[in-house]
Length: 391
Image (cartoon, rainbow, N blue to C red; front, side, top):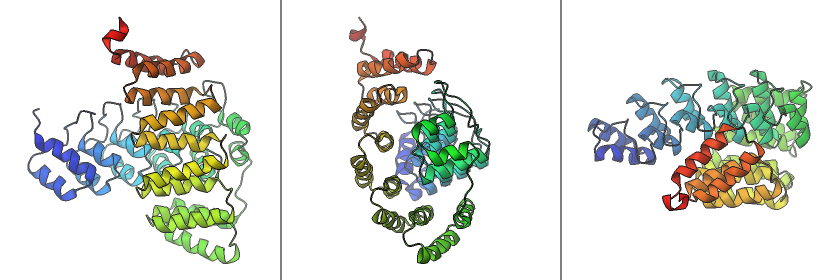
């Protein structure tokens, strides 16, 4: 098929969420199948920028939610990886392939579990995405949420959902460790109790709020939380659930204020910096969001959780040089983390620094020599080296 200028204009309009332009371009014959140099369709462009209304129009026009870009990412998995649960929910009605994987071998459930996108995880589980699928790093959604989580309020809640959906806490990774093993090693006491079957929510009030959240009854949950604040003005858990419900309602300023009120009670409650950072991300306040991660790192420089999630955000923004810097800091703290070396290699490849990318991926290979994922990525980087380097 021969494509025209209209097709590339459709991608631009979709990225910007210009619904009027999208509809006009479609009427004039623009194709939803057209891909740009990165292999992105208009649907992928709209998804990456969380343009829900644009996504709805493109889906109705016949866009394919399972079309991969040059990195093997589909719009459906992209929605999951970025926590855009409204877009993901829309795509479920348009033939989303629940078993399709990204280049790391992960379904939409895995990156949402890794990044703490609670509502997205719920949507993925409700849709029936296999809960015990493991990616090419040897991690299931449960393993990712423990290894890359912090055992805090959000991750504990999310882990409860995964376990309830049938996630196997005894499933082992390539190091022979299960989620229970990792939780114990990391000192995640609440998570350990959830995984070992010893945890029950003792506070009936919090149990009720959780149930309302899962049913999307956010206003009712907030009303109950506001009542609770009259008797429990210093209960930081109340501020977490209140802020998170407000965030789901897109009342971001109020959510941010609520999270900060929790921090005002306990400035060392690092958990809240993760929520403020993500809230600012959803508000497109990029630099402010990155600063929140830095605040948490400043309070606990040896904690890897915030550096890692900051690096995730930087990669999402395409700021790979800064992501590499964060990976180097993480590797200085934990030199045997093969996943850190792997992510560093991918960012270096995005920067066109293929020799350095090969060096980074070789460190992952040295730890796990039998993992075909690392060898595949090394081969890809070797192909991208200038011919003069290979002779």
